[in-house]
Length: 213
Image (cartoon, rainbow, N blue to C red; front, side):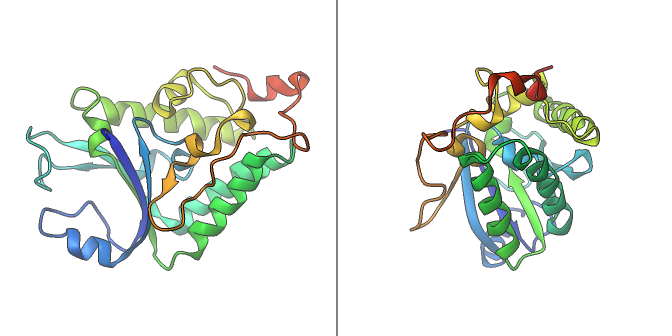
């Protein structure tokens, strides 16, 4: 498996150096993993101020000495952002994605750690040095602007970063694509289709609310 990306609730303040990983895992909670993309419901926890830069090869994992962007912010800032998105989505229709968003908020709230960090080094390898920082800045700027207008819109920057190039409607996405998966003995979210007979996709006449840029 390559180009993995990880989200963790933690008490650390930055990406650890090579000797700091034992401490990192001692003060961190459940690890979530995705591959080759930034899950949209991870991205929605952050804004542009959450972007930090790890100095070149400081953790000793990369053979080429280049810096890369990652995300970290206080949980008491991240959770309200997700709750705002959840409020917008849940007002539209009850759906498996809505239920998973509620579970996602509850899981993060239950973690006894003060920060949320997304480790992105392998995702950075997919482009040139500095590309990931630009991608994060652009996607988070677009998302913040949309939410400030009480809208949810997938700009091209969000679609590219989150791997949503073929998705028109958030509520029709596979939950695992939006959330990644929990590493450990109890996998989450459970693998299931995005809709059921009791929970149909968002009606086509409401599609404009999820208008793509």
